[in-house]
Amino acid sequence: MVEIERKFLVASEDFKDQASTQTRIVQGFLNTDPERTVRIRIKGDNGFITVKGKSNEAGTTRVEWEKEIPVHEAEQLLLLCEEGIIEKIRYEIKAGNHIFEVDEFFGNNAGLIVAEVELTTENEAFNKPSWLAEEVTGAIQYYNSQLSKHPYKSW
Image 1: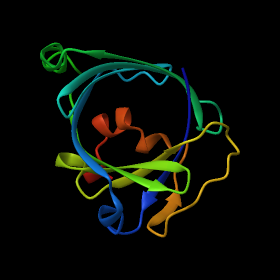
Image 2: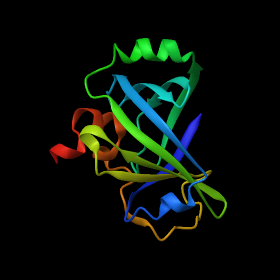
Image 3: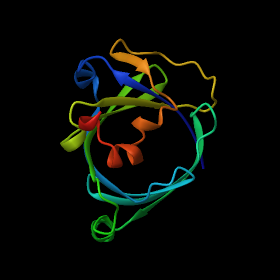
């Protein structure tokens, strides 16, 4: 139930050649308060509701609870979400013992590509692919909940 992850900008699209999967994601937020974010997501053919708690000071760790819900329920809940629906393609790339999730954003966030890697401890070592750029772990403007309110195109 605790999520530990690090987030990076992506320097090139070389990751696409290494991707084992790519999935379309549409998501919205019922609540974007940093203390408790509530997200509705359609990932491929599946629906999800997710609650995330406040991140620790480093921005690496927070409580996350997720439950799969029928996709038709997710579609209905997306209609109730705050303004600013996020659309992206998620690519999964294996690097050493880890899987990087790389999100290529569209719509008002077009041009933004962000990679995340989940870890078992905050200080766990991992291989950094050549296409990784600046680390943005803890930079709130890169949280999807913030991108829905303050999209990349407006920066």
